[in-house]
Amino acid sequence: MTDFAAKLAKAAQAVDQEMDNLLPHGRELEHRQFDAMRYTVLGGGKRLRPFLVIAGGEIFGRDIAEGLRVAEAVEFVHAYSLVHDDLPCMDDDDLRRGQPTVNIKFDEATAVLTGDALLTLAFEVLADPSTHPDAEIRCSLATAFSRAAGASGMVGGQMIDLEAENFETTPELITRLENMKTGALISLSCE
Image (tube, rainbow, N blue to C red; front, side, top):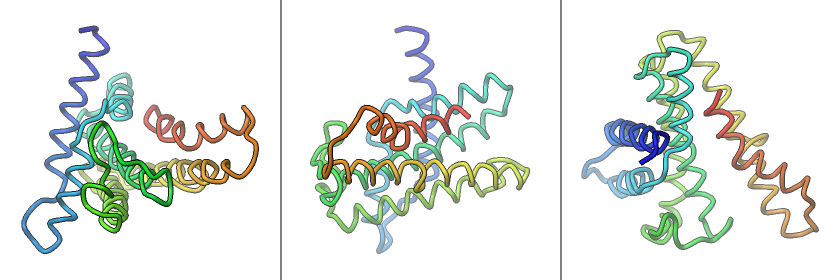
């Protein structure tokens, strides 16, 4: 295993363990929601975005616990976007990472709520003083996440993706779409 692959695997394991602790579980009436969130987030993936957060933190000597929390928030936002991307009204995918998508395994309404719950959980993690003791830094993180995930980032990129079916695409448009839909969260992870 290469040094990079080993570091990526180590970061993924740490992030998965912490996300497992943060994700709700139990047999309450809303347990189906909890199960879908856990299925979505703990169902695999390379965890490249969280790795970038952790590696950046190491470069600048940041506390690993704080970096892990930001990495988890990034992964929750990424997972939310995948759940919504797979919906019939978007890309209409049946498989994600070789497994049935949330809308197939559970149902479409559960998938929408799962994406919503993961997005809001990301902001709950960012707002918590455990992420950083300085409220101003937590607010800055929330603002940066909002921009990366919102209309000027992932959501806007998804809209362009949907609209692109109606007209001829250009290399510039595809580059813009990818910068927003995929690149915004990767850039955020590096920042």
